[in-house]
Length: 112
Image (cartoon, helix red, strand yellow):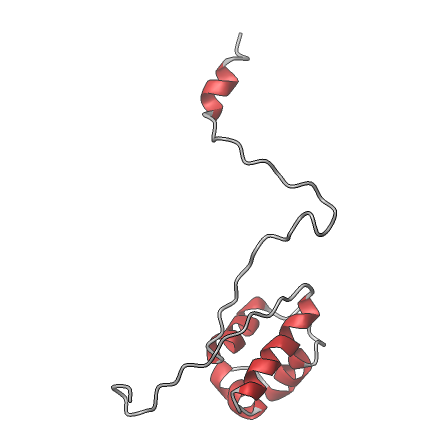
């Protein structure tokens, strides 16, 4: 029990890879359904309209406002993490990490 009298639980949080904007809504829908939360309840918690949430979950809101998306994620207790793409997977050469340079010192070489 928590200090508020509710039962604490820990759900296994899987990682969902989202490559396109219209994949995020369906991924969050999976979390909502797994947690047994109705669309109406989530919409109220996230302060979004139920019809908007329905369209978002169906992938019909690829340009959904970020603040609304983040409210839905927060209401589901989901963390959104951004990671750079695997460049080799998409045919790009990996960048080489160089030691940081002192830009001012480097530019002084070219002063007259």
